[in-house]
Image 1 (cartoon, rainbow, N blue to C red):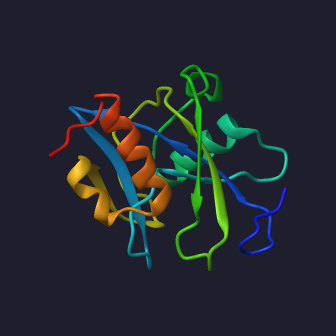
Image 2 (cartoon, rainbow, N blue to C red; image 1 turned 180 degrees about the horizontal axis):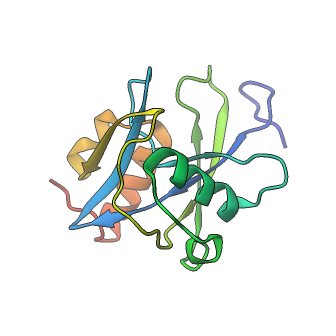
Length: 142
């Protein structure tokens, strides 16, 4: 499948949906201006939950069993990949559990707990996730 806008296949990634007290966890990597879901691209030989477990350890110092991450109902978001010249992104979002308290890893500049009013600080795919969670009543409007 190719994207008609850029001619390239969509970037495939995984993201972790972590909601506490009506707020969604988001990260901003060094050198970027927008917030994203914790997660990233799959490496060769990985499935989605394996990639996400690795990314959570690298980005946030969390421990997660791939089976625990996959236990929730994953959903897929497709949108423009932020900062990728119009290329599309296809992100599978997992809601399963991880252990530990999130703390910025070496590539993470900042963590944020967002409500709907933080959408302007987010990459397009994260805005879509945030709006979905607000509509479901899981994330607060402000």
